[in-house]
Amino acid sequence: MIYLTGERLHPHHVRAATFDRRWRGIDPAQVYDYLGRVADEMDRLHRELTTANTEAERMRQALRQWQSRHTNCRHAKHQAGEGR
Image 1 (cartoon, rainbow, N blue to C red):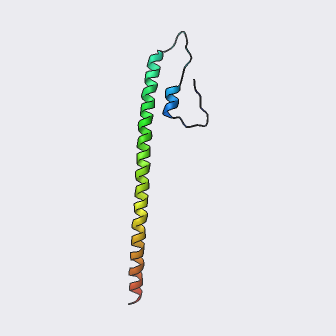
Image 2: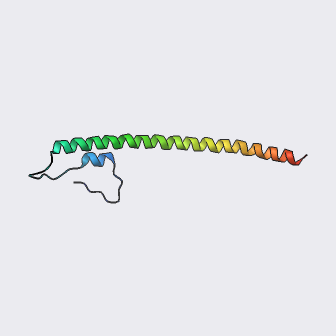
Image 3: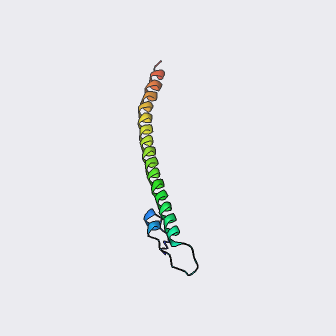
């Protein structure tokens, strides 16, 4: 079996996992089928995480742009108010 220490577990690690055979044990086909499903779910979650991170970065950039535009507006209003 593949044992990874200090590394993040990725779908290809799950798919590549192997197990020793024992006289009394569980059905290997069921184990590998389940591991395939786990790896598929990990793939889906990684894609969702990437999408969420991309969207969060887009929102951060939009917020920075909005703040820059409105900071200038506040300074102009403040300066106009001082001239009264």
